Structure formats: C-alpha cells, structure tokens
Image 1 (tube, rainbow, N blue to C red):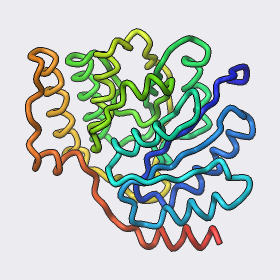
Image 2 (image 1 turned 60 degrees about the vertical axis):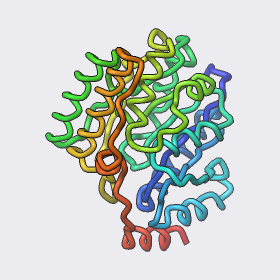
Image 3 (image 1 turned 90 degrees about the vertical axis):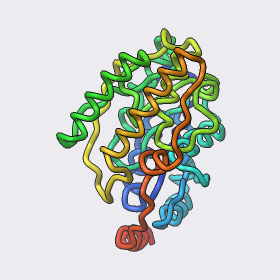
Length: 270
C-alpha cells in the first residue's frame, strides 16, 4: 500500500454501535498516520437509536479525527452500504462493519490485490471468533453459494473495490441484510468474477460491546430464500417474489436502544 497513489475511503454501515465506534476511530486514526492514502472514514447511520451519532460528533470535533464523517440513511445495511459508496471520494472504497469485529489495521492487505495485482474487488476471507452455530451456518451457506452462484465468503463484513465497479455492482434498491449475497451475485453476472479476489484472510474478533442485531437462524432462512431465488432468476430470467412477512422477519435487524452503552460512551468522550 505504501507505493500506491490511489486514494482510499472507508465506509462503515452502522447501527447502534455507541460502545464500539470510539475504539474503531482510534484504530482508523493509527492506520491513517502510517497510510496517508486513507482520506476519509464515512460512518453511515441506519436506524440508529442509541446515540452513536453523538459519540461520533464528539470524536470528529478533535482535529486529529477530522477525517471521520457521518451521514444517515433510513434504510438498513443495504441502504447504508450503497449511500456510503456513493458519498465516498476515494479511488478505492473499503466497506467494513463497525461493530469492532474487524480490525482496520488489516485494511492494507485487503486493498493490496486491487492496488498491486489488478483486481477490481476483494472479499475478505473470515477466520477467527465465531460460535459453533454461526460457524456451522456459515460453512453450509458458503457451500450453497458456491454451488448456486459461483462465489464463496459472501457474508463477510470486510470488502474493498474500485469505486466505479462497486457502484455498478452494489444494488441500488436493496436495503436489508440480503445486500451481500445480491452484491456477490451481481459481481458474477456482470462479468467481474475473474477480477474478484477472495483469498485474503481477515480476522473476526469478539464484539467489545453490545449484541448482534440479527438472529442467525432467521437470517439464514432469509439468505437461503434469496440465494435460491437468484439461482432461479439465472435459469428462468425471473426472480420469485419474496413474501413481505418473511423478508421483514429474516432480513431486517432488530432495533434496540442500548442506554447503558450510550451513557458510558458519551461520558468518556466529554
């Protein structure tokens, strides 16, 4: 990364992470000090109710953290990713979850295939912390997407790409948690499969604060339906309709206000 002239934006879809964003911003700041190509970190708040915006506003007032920006969307993860990439100014855009499970200091190796090897998109290969149920679901889903869609590691929360290619492949009208599988499907169907790197390992760490916003079994049902639907669309040219009640039950996160986390985070920032 040191020899690369391409500028980098980091987009962080964020929902109720008041207890995690301060430590994340510190790591981003450390990364930026040694890798000046990282020009901005854009936190895209979707349905945030716990005061994450207040924590980020306090952080960004510090001159050292002026690269931290905040925008908002009314949708869920999918809307946040799309809006963040649209707002990004960098040649390369990194999309990274903001729950503290990924370390920004691994960003250089995620963009290296793009900056040095001519790839257009990198999907991180997860390894590290995960409970047994999530590992079993993840392994089964990887096999399914490989068979039906021709791509693995779909649900990884650490990806990077050339901005123009991301704008072409990230769906514009998908707001829910199915964004990743639909994005991966577009990468293949739009002819970018040969320019996709998915061999870079990224570590998944335990969350520092809060709980996950989704139920793994419910989400797996929604993603199963989505994956099979996309496979049918490839074969027939038409995607089966997604029952609204099933979509809302499986592909949209729980909105919870973590008051204790909020109070502790704001007090520390004062």
